[in-house]
Image (cartoon, rainbow, N blue to C red; front, side, top):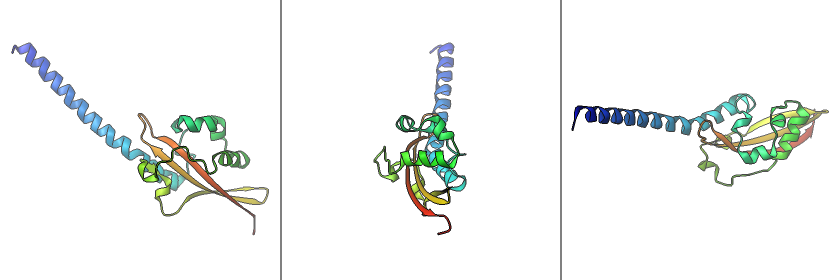
Length: 149
């Protein structure tokens, strides 16, 4: 084997090694990120943790970017009603890379409109995506009561 062929082979092996290390690191990052995001959702809420681009194409057909970003109580409740008891991916929650249902306490939000409290239990299931996790389920259950009752 000539010297130039040995150099080309050495460079090719080095590049393959670097790519293997990068791919392994990326795989660990992509697999762990959804679970970390679920912990952030539970601690800080989904609004500051998830972006519209993370929603699956099925969820984007149901929720517009405007609805997703609107923070008024009436519009937020309207969005939650669209998602009430909606399961788009029927896999068991243990099959997702991350799920808010893995926690002992449910993730919930309380909305007050016209002296009426709405308690919204939220379940968010995530899978690893190529560049960012994908939200495949955003399921809500809504309960209401009069304020002060």
